[in-house]
Image (cartoon, rainbow, N blue to C red; front, side):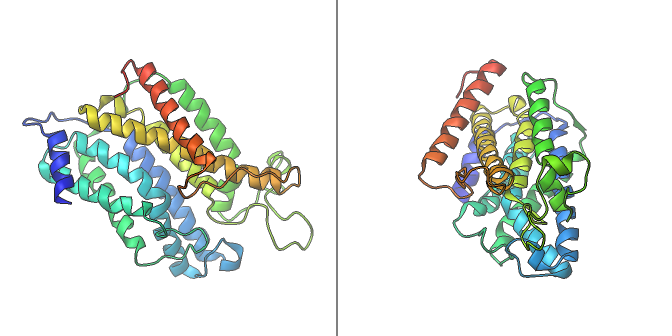
Length: 312
């Protein structure tokens, strides 16, 4: 930990950091996650565990348990680049140290088994990344006291808007599921999307109530689209390059998870094909993860070219 702090100090050392307004993209990302966490808390508190996915708790305790796991995956993944942005313009070394600690704690989500798709009940180990997220939230709140403003218009903003709009539309089944609802009976959407039960009496729904990893894909993609607007203004080249690469990887990972979930629920479950897009929730040596890595490199190179900055 001490060596990590010393490294960040060397990267961010600046005798007279200039005051700045917090990029509004950061609070916007937090609003997305807080809104989703609130919906999750209500849904997992009011519905029995049998209608949800791989949880055993019920009531408020069950809701809080699922929210804690959500603070790990996928919230902690987004807390890391947010902490990098906050550290980049920190006005004190204490803030840099706090951001480093927060990022280290948040990175616990990468440890194998910390979040298990087959068992989504909260465990004590989930508190580690949860603390990292709380640190990121606290530092954001402190930075907000100095004011906030949207980043200036960036190259690619139109692409960001189109991608976000398309992603939100096709994620409507997961948004409804987060609220504990099906789209069956909704004009047009009920015919376009299969969300309820396929056959009368079938206990399984096409899109179960509660949280989906496709929804995590939407949140990660939306966060990367927003935070990438603030990255070009980062003062420190090494940290700017690291944040850019991380967000490019986040986009590739988000798209892969989004595609896997929607293909399974809307294509495979209808019986249109038996081929499935590979599950890429956990990193492993595979063709799918090779494509994610390649996609991240290509995205980073394209983003750097559009911004007029050579890749670091």
